[in-house]
Image 1 (cartoon, each protein chain N blue to C red):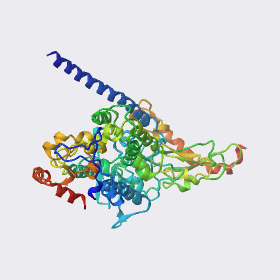
Image 2: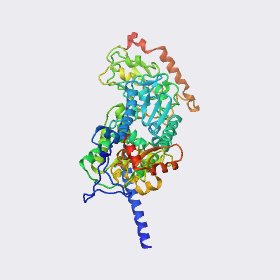
Image 3: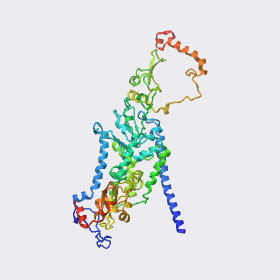
Length: 254
Length: 327
């Protein structure tokens, strides 16, 4: 009887010790995973990769997308890089995504980490182009606009706007990125002629704000409250009578 | 192989030892000539060929454009791959972890995982470990050096630890919503970096090498690896490839257990009862088959029931044994 109880106690203790040993390892393991998954928000993902969580959960790290890419854009992250180990990513400044219409990387993905819901490559959101206006040649007043001309979605993802300049009469032509159309392909970052690219691809959640529900841009929405502001459209009519281009010819201000 | 290759096994008193069946015991086969060596090492040589060959197929497809009928020959890696654009394959353990993250993977990878599961389920689960897995190249090297340098174990770790690691991998996948083992797997790191470019993965591999060489014999593959644990559960009941055992010729010298990386599977009492090594933790590496001085162990492949094999393997006369030794 006593030996029975003793062996049971021993058995329970051994089980507890074994579980404790595993738990110790598992805690360190848990930390490693969290560290990798949370601390690496900068990677630019292949087109069609859904939210970071969804992508991380599904990717099996097989590299079939890497091999399917005809431009050798994608690479699998090596251990110790800034991207979680084994997941596909690309560095736009080295090789951007050239937006293949048949999306071969999506075709190759066996798990759906590169989501099949993406039907047109123009709808992909690999990242968002962001301009550093302090170092952008166009924003400094030189004629450049290379990003605009090379953008595969010219005029929708990147447009060029006229902007008056204080120093001289010459207007500046400045590029602007529109987040509703930018795919984050990175061709602009690749072609930017400055020493360090002045336009860069960044995961949108790192740079994009969100206005929130409680602010109303009355002049934009069609809600009943905003009907009173209808008259403001008259202003834009006045602007078009007097476009920015013409101001150089109307010397009365100087 | 010649009868002269057999060296009598001497006891502590210097007298030749006699087996339980009354036959003289012998030392492990270690013939001096090349031909004999090749016979003893034939499965190790074959394993190196499959291990490196599979790596080469992946590498050649990725870098040299190897193809078959216009499709990439073997794209991807051991986690997930596609043969000739037709047959998907996937690591069933990785897919199980993905399923536990509650992300429903695409059918392609589910089919691939089912194919691999069926393949190893039908051959023998841990055939993956020693015939395919690239880490085995590292751990076998550590094991060989360890034998050469006569290094003793520093720690004792139960062989069941790997099943706890397996459970931890599955639990962590559910908790962290990423495939937990795939995110730290040294197997994946070594394999990927051999195919796609070298990073810091070698540090993990070096860790395994040091563990195996100085700390615990077969520390990684035999004690810790959850993928090995997964594969030793697969095919425990369905494996068709077993190491068959001949009671009559075995002298109980126990030399097989000294070369076996999973010596607990060579329990002689159990072997005598069943007539074969119980599938599961046995990785079918063939070391025991190659080096048994009595030729009492042999690979046996059967698609049907295994019961029919017993008489064939228990009735060996010394003549048959010497015949089998000279191929």
